[in-house]
Image (cartoon, rainbow, N blue to C red):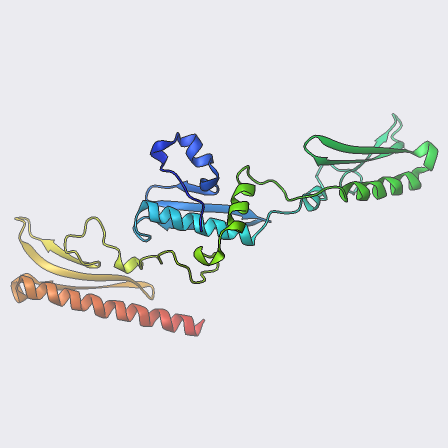
Amino acid sequence: MSVSHKNSSTLGDHDFYHAPAMYGIVRMLNKWRVTLSRRGHKFLRDFAFSRYGGESAALACAQAYRDEVVRQHLPQERREVAQKLLPSNKSGVAGVTFRSNRKGEITSWHAITRVSVDRVLTKSFGVGRYGAAQAELLAIAERERQLAQMRGLRKVHPAEQGVRAMVQKAPTTSKATANGAQRTLPEPIAVVEILRKNNSSGIPGVSCIMNADGSPRYWLAKTGGIGRRSISQSFSVKTHGNEKARLLAIAARKEQLQLKEASHTRIQKSG
């Protein structure tokens, strides 16, 4: 079950898009877009209003997909992030630094770890007391002890934890899945079945071309994505009459769709 949401008209834009329900989701011109990043991998998927039953239904599907990504792909452990070596590090060990005197001689080694927002662990080892090699080894060992006290996951967004908690409580069978598994939410409408706004025939891929005086000139059936080309067939109203030309165009469209499906099947088998 995806996180419930309120209509943007009842909330300010800032509050609406920063609410947990809208985490990782933005509204584009005619679709909702889910964008999340995990360990360098970007999850991006669009939910067009025309393919998912309208704006509200598309948002529900986008939230469900987002929830599944959050559930399956956790952020990095904070300890793992803390061990990333920064460009400014000169010791070769994350969280371990040293201090030098004016002559450039190392005088002490230090282990530093922020284990929480308000708690930083630090410990120093002087070269004068332990010797250069031993002070360095002690600082490295201390850093490991400090890291052992670090718990939890990296905070990637204020809403992440809340969304994950809701997802864990909800039954997984009612959500869309990131890998395309079966779900109870509506499946997207095939692109070839979407009726364009400028379509006057009421049938996707079939249109009536008019004369300058507004009378029907011919009916056109057109389908793209067949291999790397498009197929179009026209049927003259003067030759066939308006109704027969329309029916011929509809039949041609069905044949074109069959060719398209067969073409996709061949490509899949050859791949």
